[in-house]
Structure formats: C-alpha cells, structure tokens
Length: 322
Image 1 (tube, helix red, strand yellow):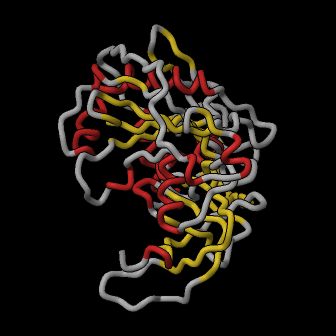
Image 2 (cartoon, helix red, strand yellow):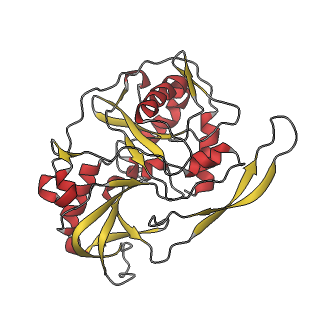
Image 3 (cartoon, one colour):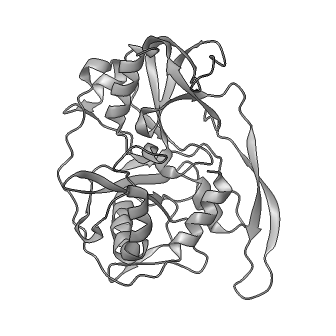
C-alpha cells in the first residue's frame, strides 16, 4: 500500500462517530518473552531482563514534541472506547472471525517505531507530519492472544481525552492506524505482531548468527505502521539473496550482510542497493478554517542518515531448501 493511499484511509477512518463506551482492561503483567539468551551476544545480551530486551526509551527525533508511552497507551484505550463498535465490522472482516471489542485488553508491550524521514516542514496540514513521523505500536488481546493492532502517532500531542473518549481538533487526521490480527494465513497474515525477541529467534535460526545489538523498530516508508521492521545487527556476515518467486529462477546472486530487518510474519529484508535521498509529495497548506481555499504545493522530504526507505525481501542461504 502506498503512503498516499494509507494516509487517505487513515484520515477517513478517524472521522468515524462513536456510539458506545467501552472499558477495556489493561494487562499489568509483562507477557512472557521468547527466551533469546542462546541467540545474542555483546550489548544485546547485556540488555536482557528475564529473557526479554530492555529497549531504548522513546525520544523525539527532532524539535517536534511527541507524546509519552503512557499517553500513547491511554489514547489507544480511549480510541477503542470511542470508535470500537463503529470499526468492528471492518476488523472482523480482516480477522475472519467475530470480535468482542468490549472484552479486549491492552497488552503490556508498547513499541516505538522510528521514522526514516527527516522533520516534516512547518506550514502544512499537521496530519502529514503525523503520517511521516514516528509511531507507537500496541495490540489488544483476548484470552486466545492478540486480536487487534493499534498504532498511535507519536505526534498526537493535540489530542485530548474527555469522559474517556478521544476529542480531536479540526485540523485532525492520521492519529491512529489499525488492523485486526488474522486468525488464518491469507493476504493479510503479515499483520500478526512480532516482538523483538521473536525477530531475534527468527533471524538467528535462519542465519546461524547471533544478534549483537538491541533491536530497533523502524518504520517502513510508505507502509502501514503495524508493518514496521525490527533492525538487527549480526555478529558476522551472512549470505542472503532476494527471495525467489515460486517457479522462477533466482533473480540475483547472494550478498553478504551483517544487518537484517525482520517484519511481521518473520519476513526478512535488507536495504535495496539504491536509496532515494528524499521523497516528493503533494502537500496541503491549511488556511484559517473557513477562510478560503487551501493552497497546495509539493514537499521534498529528505531521508534520515543511515535510515533506508527502500527494501528487498530476502532469504538466508543457510535456510534455503528447508
């Protein structure tokens, strides 16, 4: 899905009207993490607690303020109360099964996905800055496991919670993005959540290498925030090649890498050889409300140093044929 299409869907979704109030509980106990001790070394090993990682705290990438992890959790819970029933038919279609939104509980894990884009310029509709900025990734669950993924824009500093419901300003949009966790494998199976510990086990098993640095979650440019990728650094080079299409010959030779990105569903990626220095888009400059037509103009948004925006899916040579 392109960034432009995703922005349009998100703005439309946030304008839904709430009919009921829900009171989802919050799991206070930390979910048992996948034990990764056999797959890590160096700083990754020294930042483990009970087999799980102590991730870096959320920080604003520039001078634009962000909400805290606690605020993101409060907003996610308020979002479910505000729009849960109106969104329920869409979520049930994505999941392939009924969802009882009134019984969902917020999982204890909250992940901060960094943005590969530089600071969005001032003077444009603030929904654009939210779309291209960092996001918090959360999931709601029931007794069977994760049910609904909810991403909250880290730039949602102008949202308010009143009487347990979300109140947004006129210049709103791109505060939340959601997708239900499918029960079965189909076109949207990649929306199954992936913890940093699961990403480490996936990559270590596929390559035979250990992970040396604490995983970092990175937005995949132009994709849904819930499809962000875990960046993993390996203790040695490993051979990978672009993933083969069924029934076709290998499209390219294997390459040696020491960094791999792992996404939902366990898919592996490396940065494409060529990286665009920036992306170009149409920007909207909002005038004072009801004071005249909007003025549109093109925006050139640079890429942050050392953050790729283009990826290719790969498979490990060590795991080929398995």
